Image (cartoon, rainbow, N blue to C red; front, side):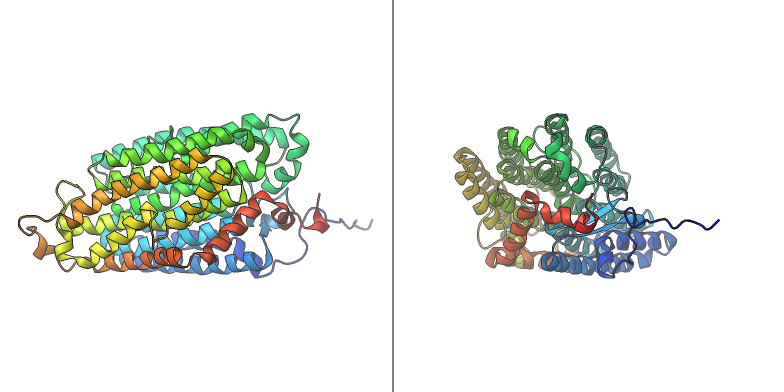
Length: 519
């Protein structure tokens, strides 16, 4: 009896994937491969920094190619195992995910370069660079996955690797901070997983495009408001939003400064990204119902966060609270849910990733030159290190949202969007936060840079030749900060395309479910 021919065209991809399609997964695959290589040469620690930087540069190049393809052709998708969605696990890259992955990789390269002097042989032997590459794979996977459960998986990937980076050194303070970080993030992870289980039980799928296509039909029968609230709680904790932000200032000051820079610059933005992706794209009606609540949470996060910074005397703790305050500013755009509001949020995320990383690295350079992170002990750096003072002034202006630095335009857009939405109190909260940030960061600048000591620091002769790598890292990050402040139009266009893609998800759905394969 002749064997029957089985038509698999409705379930599987029969055409070969083009080289361009592989760009969708390359930003995740490349750091995983380089991380595995580093494990294979784990005893040859002298090669770790070079291999890690090479891997991150290759990842950056893949991100550039992916973003260019997305901007020119629209969202791109690839489904694993040749299965058609929703049967296979999809990666889907739109302007939002691709641009955030690109900026995150940029700061990771700078941190890897800074770590060549910050991380000693023991830290390399215990796996700093493999952990770093694994973390960036998790971050890239979170930005590019098209499946809610795999968003959870990639969250776990970068959280597990971040635990390893936190405890590197095994000091009492690091173990204490890592314990708080782990326990409180486990609570957020449990909420995330619980919500995802309910989501699957409701929709029978976890493919984001599939859910977006079915959500209107499920609105009268599914517990969509419950799902939205659970995700808001989970991502609010991941992003360190008030009142779930207490884990961040308890842990971010404990690891090495380059680890804190990477965490402060990148990790909370993954939580904000997930909030935008789930609440705005998948549950827009429910988000609109919760808009006032989200707006008050945003205002509380930004104002109370920066008030916490005013109460600190350790630069790392000051920056931890500035990170929290920035999360509130980004949540303001999520609360507004308009194209202008979301554009401001995305643009602020670009700014915050770069500026917060630079501020932490600035603190590291200041500690190397002055021997302390304390505002009571550091002083007079301007006299001996005028270039450091110039970097510090630019970064203070950036954090405060003042020209000519990058923080200005996102806040201008968000203030205007809040006024257009009839929420002048939210505009006031954003402006008040800018004023308080100016005071908090100006206090740091005056005490550490401008205030003069009666005599030169005792260790000036010891450290005078050390800051070259730190200066190089600060220069690499100061350039995009200045460009975003002086010529913001290209990034504003990318942010606008990102916001439009969240509000009008038809192109995203079309990339995952091509018309000839629409279910």
